[in-house]
Length: 252
Image (cartoon, rainbow, N blue to C red; front, top):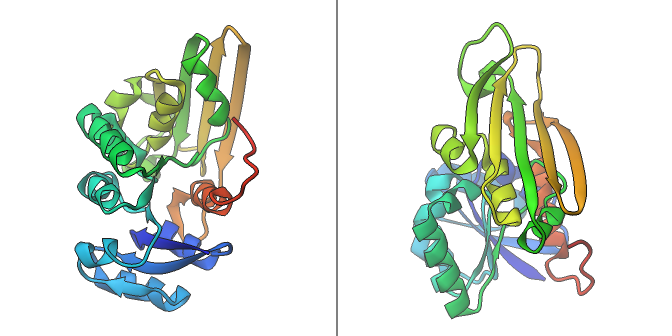
């Protein structure tokens, strides 16, 4: 059974701990040790106060479910210790120098960097953009004012530009666009809207190319214990963990 090291013990960490099936969580780490101890008690893992002890423990793969800054601080160290890593905070990979160093380290150590689909569908088929031209790649995201920490009384657009620009302004809110860019091999156009009439995050994906055209709309339910987190994002990590050791691979 695959042994998981959980980096980040917030809402997503709790969901992973509650749904462990074909894997076991054996180590947990968080900057706030009390949070690590809480999850450790839930799943029988060992909580670590220092990262070095955590990453050298008996684990096969580290699941980063913390933040962009945590991914940047620890991903290369994880790979250097010959552990695979799942990066939830994919916005960290907009830094090309960091991304290239992660890739080089993974290749050197024979390890893998996994990017879950997160809060959207259709990510696997965006990979055709690496072999066939995509002429339009757009993510239109609509969120409530409270989820973005701003005030608004009407629907309005607060950003229009590329994914690597949007993630700098809204690092906790548009990891989806970065995942799209990585899958397709080109930077995604992003529109970020705020709407006081919505109580869920809405992602609309538009892509066109030599294959035809596609439109996908995803309306996300928030996680039961944290409305700022998409439940689908947490489920996508669980889905990835469940299939990692399966010899039958479904999808592109």
